[in-house]
Image (cartoon, rainbow, N blue to C red; front, side, top):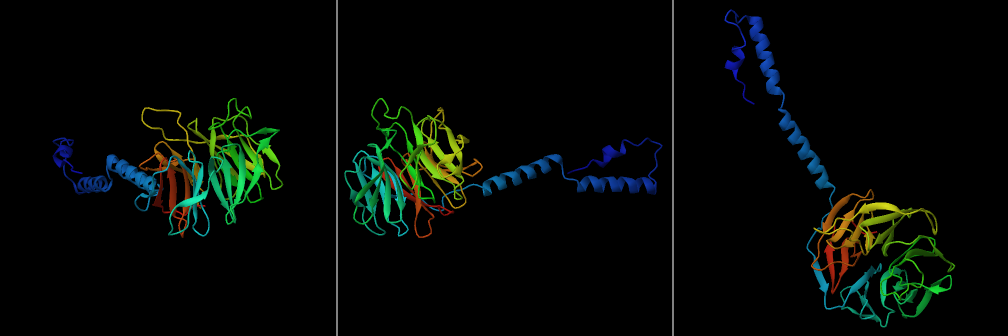
Length: 331
């Protein structure tokens, strides 16, 4: 800051005298003014600090996106076992694929009932078959067991994705994709199958409920609709007992579009959500704050985590399967 002493002097009348006390007061005032930073500088510093804090909370890839393999029709349902084995589906080709660490991608089962979402549960591979049922495969023998194929005497529309809980049950979504018309269930909902095989409908009619996941503490059930930009969350009150859904977050929309929804989802150990959508994988904090968007060469359909430290994000995206290192381990 530059001070104009001449201008200050003009405030004194011609009769004014530069007494020692007057000079002292003037000197004190100048020192005080010089020590006080301009308001603009204070505001700029505050803005820079706020910006730095916001940047520190963002989640970005720790490396480049790598294509594992392409040439598929429509990939979905990535799931990784503790031993690193990767499973994923190719819906139009009616196939579940498998890749052991360091090996080639091979066929696990075909036909697969147009399997979509998968989940590795110990020695079992759980699968949502869009042909109308939820099943479990023995990972070694590949023998299939039907877990749920109807509710109130009618087949499901087209089970899409699932997540098990710690009580031996599992939640799954049942939208309209590949379903017969009119819809066998008459609506698109979320269901819970308990450890004894009993199935309960736990939601009302939703706009294409697709991806689904549980928070690390098991207290929140997230549902990702494909025909709404509003992502949903329900409080888990007991196994298969949840609150009414409420809006958790709104997806960032492509320029010039609105109402586009999500597809699959995964969580990390800190409870952040990774939701596949038009723009890529959108990352949200447990409070619903957008933390970043990871772009891919193709629009992603589903996501999971793998690698020795679970910090490799694996994404199925249309015709290909991709991986990218991330800073936080998957849950």
